[in-house]
Image (cartoon, rainbow, N blue to C red):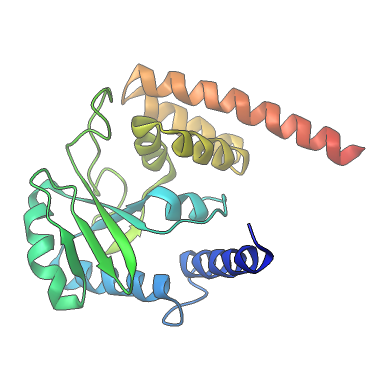
Length: 212
């Protein structure tokens, strides 16, 4: 990567992190997109639970992401594509199963439909906004529910997100996540424990290198 490209990437990352932490509102495209989604959610009564990379940033893993992932209630999946244009949100693709592709301020918005599976072999379906702790407006999914969505899709990036967030999470919260996953599916609990072991090993190595 060229130095100028790397510098631009760092600036973009700082803006995304600022938008997530509420420190940069209308000045960035992410900030504007998030504000627009909040307006839609409030006025239309459609709660939106933010998951994906933005939630990873919210929970302590500051990595770059190009889009916004929002979980939408099953009964709102058809409605959101109808009302989105009223708020300046483009409908790029209307999917019959609810995996809609939207865009606001140039930022891609991926709709994650409640009740579907993140992948064909996922052992459980995607929880709705209410289960993720968002009953109204737009907000970040609770950390236990966010972990559930990541362990369901379980791509390489999902695993990396979980590991890094685990490293930034206190033990009492990890205990809460375990309890939640026990009530979802044994596969999710097993995957969590595997990633937890990796996170612990990484933290151990980081401490050793830091002490030297």
